[in-house]
Image (cartoon, rainbow, N blue to C red; front, side, top):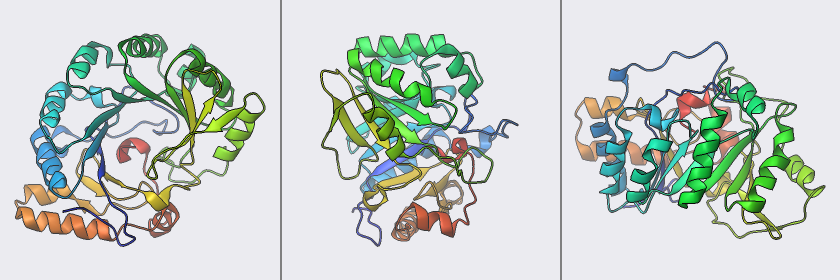
Length: 325
């Protein structure tokens, strides 16, 4: 069976948050006043997560990306990764990480053939990194990044571009791809910093491309229809770059994603509401077929795009750390 929504889109990609905790405090993700994190018993256990992954596999999910918070904050994550690797229906397992805690696990990741890592990196200098993350972890991130390049990981460096904050990081990040075979993606800032309000000062993907055009000539690359990024190549550069219109939401028409928070809330769009609490359903011991039916119905009611979902949600936004990215 294959999950589809009422617009005929096939849903085969799960963004799975394993924790709402993070050891950084990025300005676009978390309110400065701090967060109240979920208690241990409020989180889905690894066994519960695996049960839900198996159920979603029965419904056609074939790709999973682990997110957080920071996934490696959660104890015994390698155990969970080993169990996921046993699921033959998963064609791709990937991770989003800030690289502060990943270095001891690199060889194990390679042994599990988990090579696709999205890196949250919004500045390539120590001071800029500190101003955005509110933590002095740049040296560790830099060491991990270069080691992962040496070991052959497939890396995508995600930079959230914020007007008057880190626009000056666009060119250094582009220059990094000249000598390194990585992909840098520049994201529009989204209204998920915990303030509850949208942003009127977003630097759009068109503005980002316009800035790049003043310094480089580039050519478009072919990408999957479900890709959130528009990808490009600069002549003679080893790496590539892309822009992600995460606020403009131009990619919604081909969305293939489902999101599951560490506390069990399932949502079909970042800008929308929680559709189901799978933890509550799982712990109430309802029949498996009934749970599947609830999931199918929620996916069928997926909004047409992020703007429709935002309207239905009355533009009430949580912090990104609660949503799982």
